[in-house]
Length: 411
Image 1 (cartoon, rainbow, N blue to C red):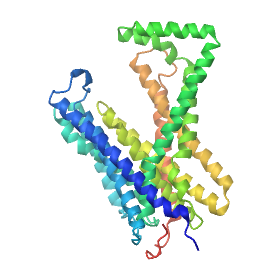
Image 2: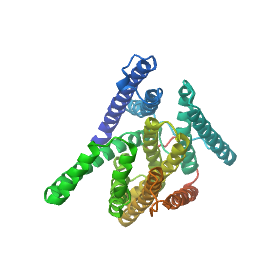
Image 3: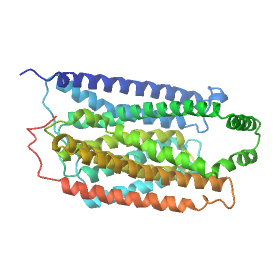
Image 4: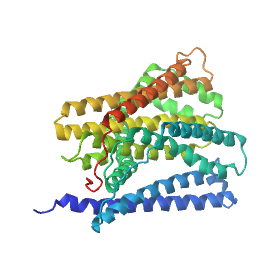
């Protein structure tokens, strides 16, 4: 019987993709390191200098981390091309007290990082670099522990490939789709304003006002009517709570779409989904390196919840994808897809509510109906986090079973 052509080409394509993306990550990291050094020693012109002297180093660290985590994907695909035997992949299980201990350590790390940022020491960012990396990676590792403990993961080839595709392919596809949406929205807006002369004049007047602003008070006066306009809020919420989740939840498990086959069980899809979601979550959270500054601790606490969201939702989608493929569960897949959109939409909606409320308070806008909604947003985010964490534990417990024979590894 002739070998499957796609199975022959997939390790070549994956190895090339891994090597190319890792190389790009390392090149950009090198550029940032050079820029950071020039800035640090006062060689770079002030026009191009960052607010924080350590910011280029944080971004470089993120890129180096991402590039390094892509290398195993290429390595194991090259091993397959060379005819090497598959190796079994497993995440070493931690006891319950170990999970609790590491979680407490993570809280202390986040608090210490926030304290260092607020301290404002000139060279404090040198100490913050390893703290930042630990603060970003520990929550994702802990969610992997919770979601994958006791579930066989198959080969290192499959596991690292799924993780790597989640780390890079998912974000690339989502970025392309969101840029496309923005471009189409701009064109639609241009057509709409062109056919409405009154609105066109209002937009021109707004642009003129914006160009003549000199003080923060003028900014507040100009933006206040828009911040408190229910229609503006509805449009923003519609975009972040409906359109964005629809594309993200479909594209995040991109690697799983190509990996699903008839030999897989639904728990394989669940495990692959968690790995893919962990890769995507890591990519997104590493991108927060550019926002290191005041409120860094709260940012990372919030990002931990978003990490859980991505890991949980992609795990559900992976489980539903394999179920639909092997068990003809098309309706289940559709139902899970809309469930993940709903969860993601609620999460984004609560986050936007907190953001709007903070902006309202910062602008000191009185008697705004948005002023007190931050409490609702925080409670909503906390409730969703607890619900997802409990459900992840329950699903993991349901999918555990006796370890497989490691000599019979499904790629």
